[in-house]
Length: 289
Image (cartoon, rainbow, N blue to C red; front, top):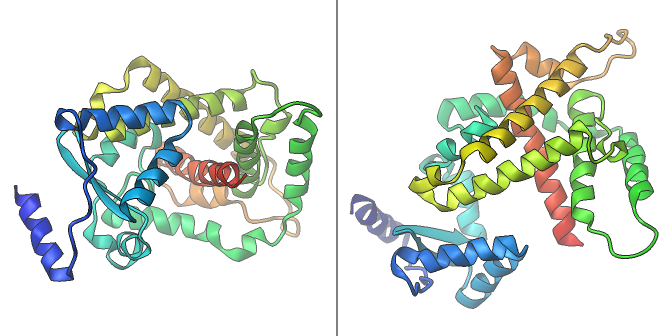
């Protein structure tokens, strides 16, 4: 009730109109949740979202398990949420939903903790770190070498490997070369575990405060596999032989190690930026094609 009153006050203050609400056919919006789960299982979730936006406009309201939620692709709203009014928004249950996989990092923090993590990551976004693009040549060659010469191929799994290779090369100074590995390698185990954990996290997010209904051994095991892979990357790269001063290059992992207080924090930051570099880019490439 208090949130509803506050929403009305904010709407009046900013001259907002009520968005159209998607109609539910079953109590608490269970049918809406089932529709999303089914679309996700059939790999047409984006298609479903775009259908609703085309039908109802750039901002809409819906009810999930009795909880009101909003969806928007309106540029002005996105700018307010992500930039100009960023401090007015909280992540709700997201930290509890995602913490078992991500730990403390930019995807699970708010306030000063988020600002600290953002400052840790800032050096990696400096343009000068990407002046040398030679590493793409080897990774693209690896991608081409594993493409079948005939038939239909699902490119998305290969794009996930490609972006894992480029991300680890940029972040750690050495790629994990997942495109060169067999399907039984640790890189493939990581990819499978991460996809499993991410899928379960998405389901947990949709259940809002009932997120704990999704999880169990499968989720725990997937998170442990991802953590193990991150630890292997850390061990492999921190134990490498130091380069001479005239050959030394900036390696993000070295910077993180010097600016984090524990091995657990280091691993969490690594997982957060691995996800940022691997997942979003691979999805963008897949959606574009």
